Image 1 (tube, rainbow, N blue to C red):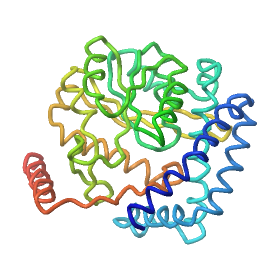
Image 2 (image 1 turned 180 degrees about the vertical axis):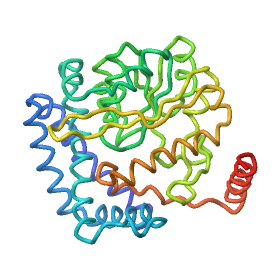
Image 3 (image 1 turned 135 degrees about the horizontal axis):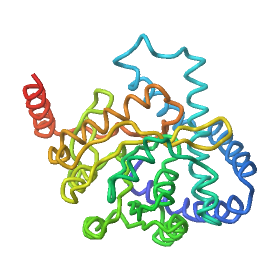
Length: 322
């Protein structure tokens, strides 16, 4: 599609996005938790039925996830179920964000729980850098950390128009955590850490090197991600906790620790960033339906120079480990 066609579609899409966000804030926030989950499950079924492009991307991502372990790849029927459940997982995560716009503290506490490891880590480390990906319900991680007494800061990318982004950011701030725009986030995040605030960051989205991304391997493929978690941990002398929120059968979430890294570890910005992605890989392979599979994660390709730099870093890491 031409650039003019894409611009036209974006303009046409705006009123529908406004309507969807408005209905989400109005309807989902007024429902009990079971009602919210039922609406999300219905919406996810509709999305799965009509989103042909998303289903295709999801299957491509599953092929990449299991490329290195073909013996572990599920059957065709199981793959279809995984994709369908991934839509449900994503819809529930978004629904949770809308639902906690009202009575945020009470609802966040009712929607999830922290493992004993997470509680111990948070109790012992203020500030801290918590890292996750778009797996499970990523919003609940920062919310529960806030309820444990951490002043939390997170980053939000623009979604749709400026007004739409502002509305969503106000909703996400309802529990008391600070949300800063991705553009120009460095100063407020650095200032927040100096003031003792903890950070809640996602690390699996593609981030161009011109925007602060670095190339690592994700499921064996070059993938540019934000170096912010390791950078802020090293600068703020704070440890990193890689965690995720496991969906429970009753629709709630249990936040579980995957790994931790010290502020000293984080001085190796590339090395710790690669380890964080490898940590998430292991969880995604075990629970692929919990990841946002219809996100076109692997769409960026490194230049020859960027690939050479990545391979040089990998050689250096292997030599250091031998």
